Length: 96
Image (cartoon, rainbow, N blue to C red):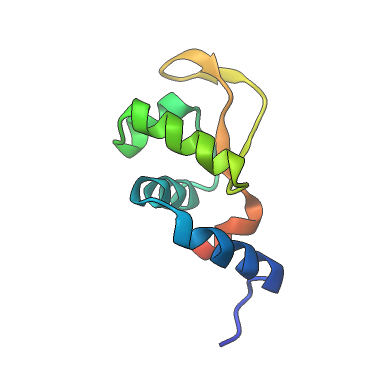
């Protein structure tokens, strides 16, 4: 079956997908549904309904494996400043 997703993106997805935990997939899917914006970890926790302690660890792992990218620090709408994250553009088609 042909898709609009580039072959290199598909290989990258299939390389990481089997190792993702349920919470990580939940975060990725939430970010894909909200691809028009980025989220600090606290914003991600509040708006997705996932505990902040779970979000922080999962986001750090997703950054490490290259599924997410971290942006410049900004004010969080729920408190302190933080570095927002978003899904890597190459991942959008696979999780939307």
